[in-house]
Each structure stands twice: as structure tokens, then as C-alpha cells.
Image (cartoon, rainbow, N blue to C red; front, top):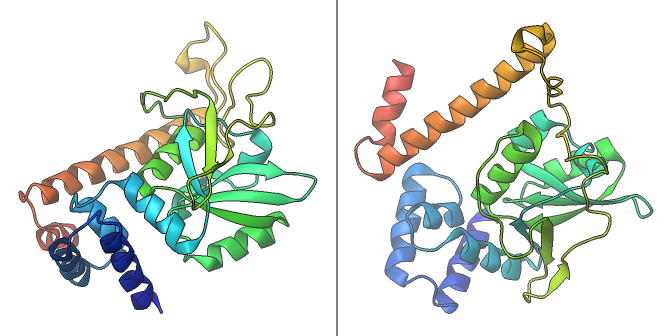
Length: 248
């Protein structure tokens, strides 16, 4: 079943003329060697952009896609999933309708049905899946849950989140409910509270210091992974050599 889906995605990208047959063959060979998803492999090999891949997946799977653009999410949506679960499974709740008990969940891999079922069971909500780019989703999770400033330039609609259907029509552009709470920006759930103005770092509690240290360690691990990925991409290091170094 998974193989059929990969073939359909390749055929879709070919018919849309966003990749060539030689690029598809090269990506399939790379995927066979290293594993992973075909779409992610095509993006890593720079045969197409993540945005183009998301549009193709949205059309192929008939699912809406999320366009992160100065993303602002109501706290009641973020609080449906804790930071550790969101980061581990790369999922992000982007909207919540309390009346309908419906949660819109951004995912880069909608084939993970077990995660959707688990979230539905945990929250008691009907989960609606929307496609998001892998890198854009990871960046949004780091920003909203870990409080990292990604210094990305927002587009023309700052403070908005777009939900776009497979035909390219915007379903949601700027919900009235998707706003920061009055009095300040959204604090990501589980993030340590900011120190009061003028209070030295030494005045923070042990729990706060540990929480900040853990967040810093997670960030350093992601930076290290990005460096390794770049070295592999440039041909300085192979994945096999990297694995040997880790196992040594």
C-alpha cells in the first residue's frame, strides 16, 4: 500500500511537470538506499521545493494544507497537545472549535493514522488533518512550544494562518478566534515563565532553570543535526560514516 502511494505521488509530480523522470528515478534510488518518504527525499535532493510538495500532496490526498505565515494559534488549541508529544510526533494543533469539538491538526505525514487516533482519544475531539511542510511545521513547533525566535520574515498577512483546500482556495485566512490573548503574546504551554523585570537570573527557581536548560539542549541537538545534514549534503560526510562514528 505504501509503495503504491509513493508511485502515485511520483506520477502526480511528473504529470504536473515539477520533476523529470530522471529526477524521480534518482530519488527512488536514494530512497531505496536510505529509506524515508519519497517526497522528503525529492526535497532533500533539491528537485522541488517543500511548498510544491505540499501542494501536490494536498491534491493527491484531497486534504487541506496549512500555510504558516506569522502563525498565531489560540492557547486552547495549543493546550490540547503537550510540547513533548508535538515535538516527538511532529504535529501541531492549529485551530480548535469548542462547539463542534473539532481540532485541526497540521501534519507533514498524514499516513500516521495511529497518531491521529491517539490525539482524538486523548482530547475527545474529532481531528481534522491538514498537510504542512516538514521544515515549516518543525519551525512552527519550535517557535510556539519552545519559544525560539526563528527570525523569519512574515508575509503580507502577518499574524494569520491559512487553511487551503486541494484546489488552492483559501478556507480559513484570519479567524477572529485566532488571536493572542489580551495583554500580551501567547506563551507556549509548558514553557518556563519569563523572569519578572529587573530580576536577576539567579533569582529564578531551580525548576525554571532546569526547564530553560532542557530547552537549550533540545535546540543545540537540532543545530547539530542541521550541521550533520549539511555535511552529508555537501559530500563531506556520508551517512554510513556518521553512523559508524555514533556507534563507535
